[in-house]
Length: 221
Image 1 (spheres, helix red, strand yellow):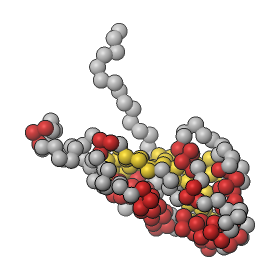
Image 2: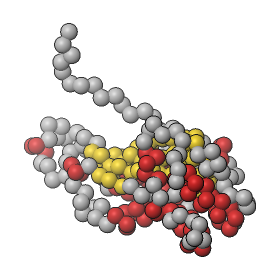
Image 3: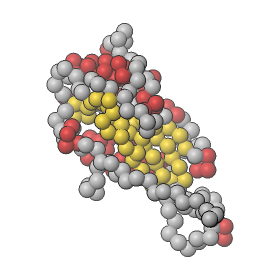
Image 4: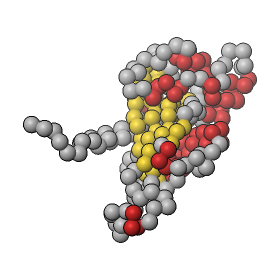
């Protein structure tokens, strides 16, 4: 038989919650985001015009929601990692210039070198400096936001009239979905122990990212 008609697109898998119970009381480094992108159809060229500023703002949203919604973990945020790296420039990698974006690939189970050794070095330096309030010896885990991508949700495009919209009168969906690829790495073994794509809808990048982050800690407002 002919498989004619619309192609079925499977719904995305539900977002796996962060395994905070297993990380409670531990020091976990949070790497800065290095990859942010938006579909051309969103026309967010002006909204996301400054890459450095956009990455910094995304780091701020991620860090704030981790610390407020999962306080049982001692999160060592990107600014703390940068301070540690600046104090040891001969051995520490720059957290903003290491290849964490490669970890967005779903088929990667073991972090390749040199990224693996760079994550291990940062964790050891943070532990030795007492960063984030954790104990010495370095944290075992690192949380890596590997990529942030904004896609159209299929709602009414900005600037279109109701006459152009066949669903005029229906509640408009937010125009964009944030998809945040996130992993947790065991820096001693290099293995990825947790992987998720957190999704959230919003009228702008930051409300969408906020909702995506909230999906990682369900059960809270």
